[in-house]
Length: 163
Image (cartoon, rainbow, N blue to C red):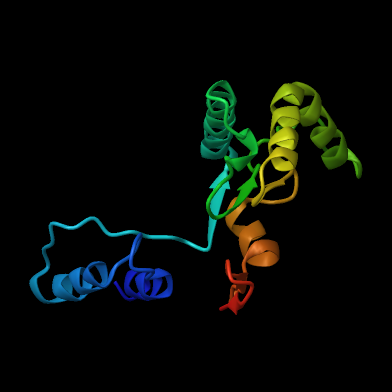
């Protein structure tokens, strides 16, 4: 609950997050019940390819719909930063040689070339969207060793930085 409360306090703007939303969380702490929906805006979303690929498909479909409606499709982007880690995808075809891993990754790219081309497109097309390629490591390891940030600094609409 502390994480939710801190998140609401950070994003309270009187419109998307109100003081009543914050009071609802503090009220829940007393009564353990609430009839309010609580907004949660994470600084970043970590996804595996199993769930991330359908999300990119949805974003692409929303861009197509926006274009058909005459709007600017480039306005469709993830609201928070997204890191999509492709893990557990490299199968073992070669083993017992010093270049086995390299060969297995190459085969993985050949087997799933259309999928990886689509994800490469997504990374180039969408703001706030990064893809970690296969063979880099498992999702949580990659997150802890390369991606995670302890303190997030963001530029606000007024140009000021917020922590």
